[in-house]
Image (cartoon, rainbow, N blue to C red; front, side, top):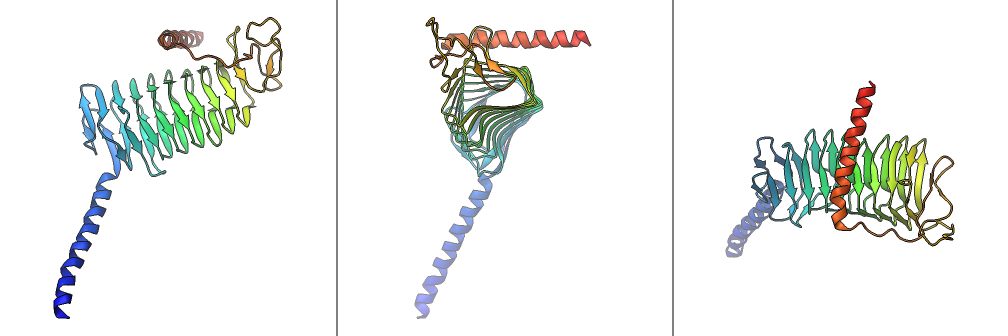
Length: 304
């Protein structure tokens, strides 16, 4: 019996050490990654820096990223940043000219936060299974383009001005695809907004321009509250799968407006799905929108 006991004790100690060391490893893998203002990366060895480009070289789990440096590119290179449902994935706060691209973000409170930050680009990411996929607050001249935003509670929350939401797929979000609150002068163009509870929720908003979008199979395509926005570009509007008007001249545009609420309508609804922009058209469009926003801001400044 003593021999069996003497053999069991070392095994017990080894087992305890294995469990303990595995827990240390899990703790060490969690926490916050910083891209510091000076350029160094803290908190992981899975992001490689080459000049102003920071590239993922592996998946990162149970960590979030705070960017403190301006004028950089964060390239996910197809890898994942996955949370535990509590933290925010990538935070851009008071930084400018950041590109976040080619990254899969999932299981965060908010996938990407843009706060008090201008001239940033969120491009071709997959943003899924978060409470909010993307949150832009008090930020201007940011571009969100080519992203797949799905299975969140809210796809995109926008509470600021002069931003562009272009050519994204926004689908199967349980509350809203896009939530606009107190937002103005934003361009929402060429998005596929499908299978959401509410396609777009617009609350106390003004002068947002919303056209060339496809609204398909949402429980409610649009809900508005005390808002004054534009739902066409004076020639073409959006596609609404519940539009029942005729196209008697066969030009692809409905003969009668699509009524959104008592004060708002799409004057030029498409009768067929709006085709995607050709890829070469995106850059000129972004340049045009940027110059338009700058011109309008200067105009407002001169009035004061």
